[in-house]
Image (cartoon, rainbow, N blue to C red):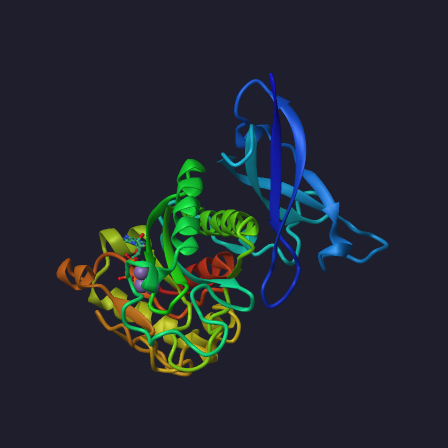
Length: 338
Ligand code: ADP
Ligand code: MN
Ligand code: MN
Ligand code: MN
């Protein structure tokens, strides 16, 4: 037997953007614990905007488990927040609203800034660095600085060790801006992994005295904002698809445009302006390889006869992947399959 440090992590009740919370309990297991072996736990919801003080108990229900190599016998336990009865999802529990579907795949491209002393890493104390151009996928101290790549590489290793399905990383268009991509099969897996990866990144940055800025437009002017493009496909889209179904799907996305924008992250009007590879927030468009559209159709989709995945470019970096996945699936479910 060994004592494992179980870090239960969950999303609090702050709006419009929930914060990650976590606390540790120690339990003994013969080997690395499986999800079924992890008990429900509780926390004081009155401190996280999830309950009143006089009836403050909320329940944590483990839903995903990851090895945490930053600690001896460390375990990250992603949890859903439940009501005191342990079975009713708490109103802040958006994961519970995602239609369960093993045939749905999501790929999220999380962009973010690394910040220190109130500005992106690599920005001078006064004014701005050289304009955008060389930073995207750049190399060299003047383009990416020193500590940023160290953080990004360390984060990648921790996530891979945790079994998080990272597909890649890259330096982004603005100085101090980075991206990682996470892909998952099943309607909840990629969203779980994004939250776990955010947790690991936020915690890793503590020792560098760096913060992660997820806001979608932290710097005004000619500096890119941050998105979280949501790539999605269902079993039907991949195996049957077709032009008629695709057009029906886009009709539904058009019809539910406002409901999508409502959960695609706060302040998105600052980012979805029609500039910097975005469509403006009040328009819905789609187009082949069009990075100025709301939804980009990859070449592979057309080449294979309207089959495959689509990229919704509107979700922003601060969006909750649970709410985004939930909304996309809800809209898809309104489209009849012939
Ligand atoms: P870009 O920056 O050109 O938009 P990326 O390579 O950063 O492209 O991201 C593409 C994303 O699409 C990846 O996260 C990948 O996992 C995802 N993806 C690829 N195929 C599928 C699929 N069939 N269903 C859902 N997502 C997919
Ligand atoms: Mn990308
Ligand atoms: Mn990007
Ligand atoms: Mn993209």
